[in-house]
Image 1 (cartoon, rainbow, N blue to C red):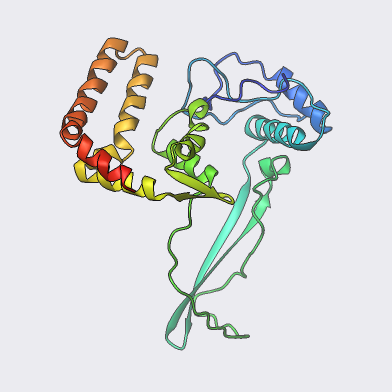
Image 2 (image 1 turned 135 degrees about the vertical axis):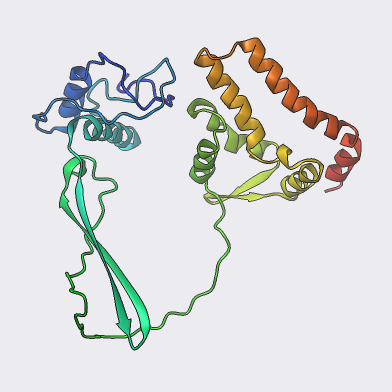
Length: 270
């Protein structure tokens, strides 16, 4: 393959990792000059025990989406391990305009660092001038903007996957199936790039929440994921984890079982 195993949550390199092969692959594929510094990767905290962070294995000479993905992996690998930190200066000011407090802020990139190669999220410069306390400035123009509070935007697939990761639900390998799963079960539909809950999905959440909020919040599922991580780390056995998880789910099941047919009838009527 052209990149290492992609479905990994690992973001730290283990001691002894050989950076030379992926470095040569990235340099050849991107057509750039070999970096002159040694590998000093910025280490994360996650290690799934089986895989390394994603890195380029061979130079890719194709085109289209495959090339864009490969270039992203290669550039991120180089930025993480072979480029220095970027240096940005930020400046803010508070002004008094006829008794009304106004604030301004700006920033400028002084040293691009890793943005030289990893240019996807390079911040734009929007500096403000250096001001002294008590200094007077000239008002060039005034504009009044009227707006209204808007409800939160509907979730896109990437929004949903990001929320699942933040709440510790699933792994990189399993989360990708969830968007399709909720649509296959009729809980949501996709309109363009965003999800819209169906009447069935809304009713299901409403019914389960009245029985116990833990049935619809991330905590219960996250606990199971935590048990699996503890097994992987060797801190508890499979049997212990299974017993603890079953105990938590049994409490919820006991609350649900006496009302399951009544609630099922409610859902069937939607």
